[in-house]
Every structure is written in structure tokens, then in C-alpha cells.
Length: 552
Ligand code: GLN
Image (tube, rainbow, N blue to C red; front, side, top):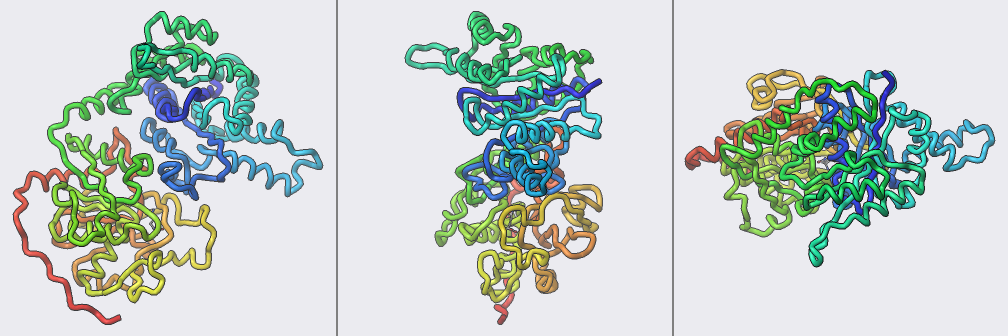
């Protein structure tokens, strides 16, 4: 069987959830027994989103092979069993970079290098390469942006050509549009969808399937009308309504018969539907939790959920694993810098300090960590959160006054976190971190070892700073333990505190590998500890006393 291709485009407005739609289509095809991979093209000029503010772009997702990628790749991995690599995400900038590098090498033999055919050929090559040498049956390609944008034109032209070359039955286009509800006239409107399909047809692409996002039921009559004006069979006009949980989307699409239509149009055999029960079970658990735990999420970008997308989802997965609803209480780290103010910290069942860059809000994070340590509230520190836990312990338990990370204070008397040895002298910002999958050995008897159930794991990283091994003996002496370490002994990967019910920090990002059907062990264990904390009588305990101040 030749590889099949599904192209996903978007019209009318951005933010229609194209990524989740693409991922859900992947889930449906997997349930039918097909092997899928998903690929995203982003029309912006940045070579990758690594240098972009999470405020603007949302989370930077990291792949095993160390690509800094669009957050939609996170959805792809959570909804399907694919593991993304740098081949699964391209930006305009990266495509141009490849072409310009070839031009500089003289590969084009004196030709004028142009958008058509050189850029479009490069895009087509990227599409082919993503499944080359694999047994993938269907490649799902999402084109970022909205049809009609100048910057997405080369991608649309490339997929027009690709479809033409692949032939009928081997490639199709799913166009995601919006059918808005106008309150004043109490009507759903089809015109934006018509216009967006017109735009697509101007470029030479006739959509095969329309996914119509709508907050209201689209009547049969209206589906007929959309089909007629957009030249799409009525049965291929699929309503995509808002749902309570994103993991319902594959089920909602299946109810509308989308999987059957895809198989028909791609001339694929209608294998018996298999594991949709997996999604039903996930949704059932989310709908009927036994209890609720409140997790205080301390961070800098707390006002923008997309900047911590995978983390939010991993917490939800931890809840699914423990039959509880996880209510995330966002706590702005800067607000905690006010003396004596603990905000909602006192009322949560677990505290999480997440990844971050730059010094803003760090003192607030340190106060949150101290609170979690002293009040024996389950604490989970991820990347910067783990580095902050190290600083807090050094300052308040070892007496290292002014201990800090050199990211925040180059002159700190105790540089407990310092720049990765391999990065000394590197000043560029893009792609210059310790990125991607690295191995880690877990210490016998540790919380981490207990959670994972194995002694060796591989997790994804994205950092420039690390624990300075020079101070480990002093930290360990006071009950701060390194329980996860790289096999070469160079990198501290996990730290835990003696005498605390659940206090764990990791240098890597476990959230990237969590799935609703396979919640990450550390999130599962953290939520279990939070549940335990909630249930316990919260008796007062004897706190460890800080040591005398040291002189640097
Ligand atoms: N800023 C820290 C570093 O570069 C932490 C990074 C992170 O949290 N992803 O090491």
C-alpha cells in the first residue's frame, strides 16, 4: 500500500483547534489499525519557536532528538503513539535556510532560486521525508496559519502540487472553518466558510472534507447549503462542536462518521474499529472523578495557559491515573514576593514550580518552595523549579546566604546553579541548550525509583544551567539528595528531600512524555501524594532547623 496523505488547512480565523483536529484524526486512524505520523508547517520566519516568547507563541515543545517545536506536536504525541522528531515540524525560516544553504554551496548550478519551484520542492521533500524508511500508512500534515495569509502561500502551492502528483485516493484536504453564531439575529452564518473555501480554490485546492467549528447545532439544511456552495459532498460537511474535554474530540468525530469518510476517500480498507474504548475510558474518568485535588501552579506566564500546555495536560493525566479532578490554581510568582503574602499556597494540596527563564518572579518561586518544604506540602519542581529548590535549600537549610543561579546573579557567593560546562563561551540564543532525550539512573529507595518502577529512564531536556556538583556534599549532609543522575555522573537529574512526604525536583521535562492513556509516572505519583496530603489530618510536625550561616 502506498503512503496516504491528509492535509489540514484552516480558514476564517485562527485558533480553531486545527492541531487537536489533526491529532484526533490521527487517533481515529490508529484506532482503525493504521500507523500514522503527523507533521506541522508553520508559516513564520523564525527557524524554530525556541527563541519565541511563550506569551506570543505558547509552549515550546521538545522532541526526543532535541528539536524545539510547535506545541501542536505535543497534541500529536498525546493523541497518537507517534514520537516526533525534528522532521515533524518545519517553519518558513527553516525551509528557506535549507534552500539558502544549498544555494551557497552551489547546488542549484547557476539557476535563479525561486519560491516556485525551489521552495515548494523543498516543502514537498520534507513531506516525503517524514515517513521515509518507516512503515507509516498515513501522514497527516497541518498547515499553520489561515488560508488567505500571504505567508502560507508557498505551503499551499506545495500541497496543491503534492496532491496532483500523488493522485486521487492517495491525498486529500480537510479544511477547518468556522460557522459563527450571530447573537443579534440568532443565526448561524455560512458565508465565512464559503469565502474561505473560495480562497482555497483560487489557489487550486478543492477541499474534500470540511470540519465546521460551531458552538450551535448546524441543521441538516445548512450542511446541504455549505456542501452545495463549497462543492463538497453533504456527508463530508462535518460539524465540529465545542466539547468539555479535548479528549472527547476523537469520539465526536467518530460519531459524525469522519473516520469512515476518510477511509473511503483514501481507498483504505475499513478495518474493524478497535480501541476507541480507550478514549471513552479517559473521558469517563474525567467526567466522574472520585475527588478533587488543588495544585498551586507557581509561574511567570500563569496568565496564559498555552505557555504551559504540556504541563497542564500532564497534570490532568495525573488526575486520570488517580481518579481525581486536578484543579489548577495559578499563582503568579511575582505576587509571592510581597513579604508575608502566601496567597493561595496555604489552601492547595500540592505545589508545582515549573520551567522558566530569567530572574523575574524567582524570589517568589523560592518563597513558594520554602512554604512547601516547611509545611510538608507535596512539591514538584520542573527544570527551573528544580533549580530554585536547590537554591532555596542552600540558602535556608545550609546557610549559604546569597546562593543563586548564575542565570540570575553572576556574582553570587554560592553559585549552586551554574552554566552547563559544555555551553561556556556560547552566546547565541537559538538551539544552544542541552536539548532532547538524555538517560538518567535512579537511586534505589527514592521516590523517583518508586514512581517509575525501573532504575533507568530517558527524559527530554531544555536547559542552559545545571546543579553545580561542588556543593552537593554540603547539600546532601543536610538531607538534600541527588536521586537521579546521568550515567556519566555529570548531570544532576533529580533531587529529593529527606523527611518530606513528597518533594521532588527534576532537571528534565517529564510533561512532554505524558499521555492521557499513559500518564507520566512522576505526575501520577505527585497527584497521588497531593491526594494523600488532602486526606491526611495535616498534623503539625517538627521542622528541620536551618544551619548557621556560612561564610563564603
Ligand atoms: N532557565 C533555566 C535554564 O536554562 C531553566 C530552563 C527551564 O526551566 N526550561 O537552565
